[in-house]
Length: 556
Ligand code: GLC
Image (cartoon, rainbow, N blue to C red; front, side, top):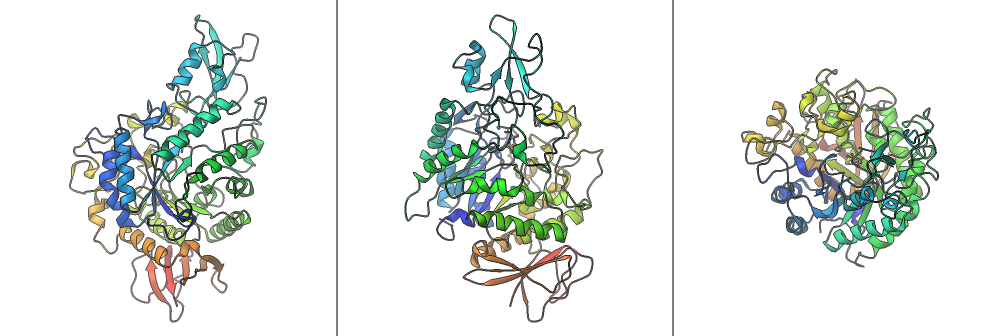
């Protein structure tokens, strides 16, 4: 295995593949598992430790697979179980671990359990696996409470009972085709643990847990306080998020995962929470020693490219993780947010980043600036101690597709908000592999489920592979050095004596010490005497000062 020591996950770089958009083997315009398997050498060459696959399970695809109808099978769109086994075997052969998504908060409305619930009476065992309630108001025709869906509109949908009368309501924190499970029901717990075992038995190395902070709802489902600002207030103040009961579930999952680890083999099976939880101290509870291994650090992703903000987020993040003995994780892009090469092409204000989709009529980013900053930000991230997550295509410097026509948009957020939120399609556009091929080599023909912007051609893997100045080469170099110098296991020390708009720190590991300078100011920053630049995010002349929006790694 490619891991750099015991507990491989402590410094692992994990690459997210969004199966519908990475590589299409059969030409239907939707990526698939055989396509992924064929392209895995790209990841080995890139130098990551693991691949995380977003859902490929049986699903009507109303939320691109995050609406699971059968947790133990592969959707025919993506292949079949044999194709999954072949993928895992090939990944392991190449020294890559395999992490899969598990979606425990909700299923698809096409799951057999939900179908049975609809066909059964109120109060039945079948309904008790989901959150069914009578409506409020004199005729029960108002939703049971005031909760709203994350994708817009009410979080409740009313069903029609078997006799044709308007009936109970069911809860869905996301799309109306994604009914929430009732985690107070032991049957739900057993079922999801069975799902974990199913994939562990097939050899997966871990799970990314979708909406990990949502499983347990406050008792009695009280109304939510609409004055709370989800970006500022403690998430646990909201009755649907970060309820204390989730921790017991993850303790049990940890025992399960640990039962698969082989002593002495560096074969830990890991659990990583997707939990949008504030404050960071609450998030750290998810990674206490007897709970999950990792949780995504979205606060880092949301931090503007401003030196003070970066410094304080990094310092706080490290302290919070250290307090519970967990590695911190770092992430700049994923399938739910605007790609960082585009995000950073907008003015950087204090407060939170713009992560929501962009439309053709919205202000457009400065693409060159965005890419320059994205490369600099990545060079900061990949030096940091802990584990890092990459999103497919960021190693190519791919920008968000910001001019998708509304007619092609598929994210349910777009429809559920009547188009006021553009949704997340812009970061999900299929990846370019070969500049001269149809669909830029995504598939064998022209088909691509979302149209690829013309500028993706020049960013294709084959254009970048042998170009020493390309973003792909930068990622490869950073990842190689990170591994050789074991930076992920290092300790960070901030350096004094630099201008306030420069991030200056050393990472020291048992192997080496590296100094990182990131210039977020406007003045060029002279290199320290005697320093050797071992990596740089910008194109530079030998000995030149560190430019604005450039990061360098130095060795004494
Ligand atoms: C998570 C996923 C997102 C999905 C949602 C509902 O936030 O990352 O893509 O839409 O959960 O499952």
